[in-house]
Image (cartoon, rainbow, N blue to C red):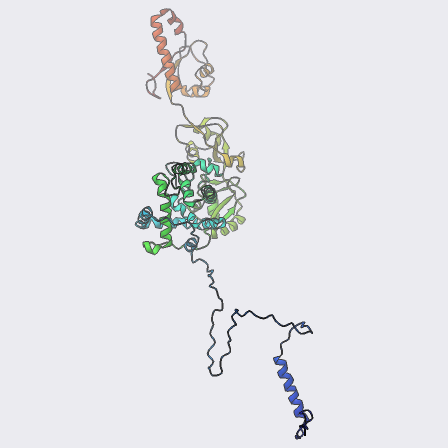
Length: 531
C-alpha cells in the first residue's frame, strides 16, 4: 500500500485556541516584522539584476562579529582615517609664523658660522634690533605671504638697517630697506623737501619686494637676487658672464664679488639660524604677537604732526617712529594721504577727530619767486630768519634759489592746503652767498646813487643801507661811499686797477684820463673797513 503524501496526511487534533490569544500573536508578529524591514525609496517592482562576480584577488572585508565566548569590552575612540592629517594650528607668535615660511636653500659654510658667532656674542644688539622690528615685522610678513615669496626676506631689514627706518649709509642709502636715491626714484619713492619715501614703512616695503621679485625673475636664484640687491644687478650679471666665458659655475659662492656682498647672504643665513633655533645660540627673542601693530588712517586735509599725535593720544616721537618719511611738522594730505598709528590709537584718533573743531594745520608751502637770502625770505613770510632756517634746514651763508618750496606759517593770504604738484615735487635749491669785500667809491661829477648801484650790480637800497643814507639822497662830488662787492669781482677790479697804475707809470699822458674815472679802493681783509 502506497503511503499517503504529506499533503494528504490528516492533521493532528489539537485543543482549540482562544481568539484573544490569536490576536495578540498576530500583533506581535507584525511588530517584529516592521522592525526588521529596511525601507528603500522608489524600489523597482521588478527584481534587481544579479551582481557581477567579484574578482578573486579583491580582499574580503574583515568580519567584525565576535564569537559568543569572547566578553564585550568598553568602547574606545580610535582613528579610522587611513592617512595622516597635517594639523592647521595657528602660529603661536610671529616668529613661529616666520619659521613656517622659510623656503630658501640653506647656505652652510665658515662665513655663516662666523656671523652666527658674531650675533650670538652680542645679545644686547640682537635685543635692540628685534625690539625695533616688532612695529614693522607683521606688515612685512603679510606682504611676503601675499606674494608667495620666501619668508627669509622678512629678515633682510635686520641686515640692511637693523630695522632702523632712519638709517643712512655712507653711500646715501636710506631707510629700513636701504634704497639708494636713484633706485628709489625708479620704484616711485618720492624724495623731496617735505618727505623721503625711502623711509616710509609701506612704500619702501612695497618697493623692496617689487625689486627683489624683479631680481629673482632675472637671475632665477634667490641668493643671486640678494647679491644683486646689495651689489647691483649689473655687477652680478657681469660677474656671471665672466664665469660663463671661463666655463666656471655661476652660483652665489662661485662668482667673484666684493667682501661686503660675499658676506651678505651668510649674514642673512646666520640670523635665520638664530631665529629658527634660538636655544642653540642661547638667544632670547622678544614676544611678538601674530597680529598687526599699526593701522592705516586716511587724511583728507593737511594736519599738523603735533595735532595728529594729540588726537591719537600718543607721543609725537612715537608717531614719527611709525611715519619716519615725514620731514616737516605738517602732513600734506595731497602727497601723504595715509599715516600709521598704533592699532588701538587709530580708533581713538578717529573718535577725537570727529569732536575736534579747531584748525587742522598751521603750516603751508610757499614757492620762492626769486633768488634771495634767508633773511629776505623770512621777512616776506613773517618769520624770523632763525626759525625759517631751522624749519627748512637752510645752512648758514646760503641763498634760496627761485622755485624752491619753503614751509611757512599760514596766514589769511596763505591758508590753503598744499597742492599735489608741490607736495610731490618740492625742492629746496640753494646757492652760496657771495663772499664780499668792502671797498670805497669816490663820487664824481654827475654820479647818483642809482647810477653807482647799476655800475656795481647792487641794489640802491643796499648801497643806501651800507652808507646810512636815504635812497633819495643827493651825492656830493668827492664824497666817499662804502660798497660791498663779490670777492671775485673785487679781485678782478683790483687786478685791473694794478694794470692801470703800471700803465700810467709808463705813459703819463693817459694818467690824466684815468684819473677822471671812479676808483674803487679795497681792503686786504673781508668785511674790514678801509682806513
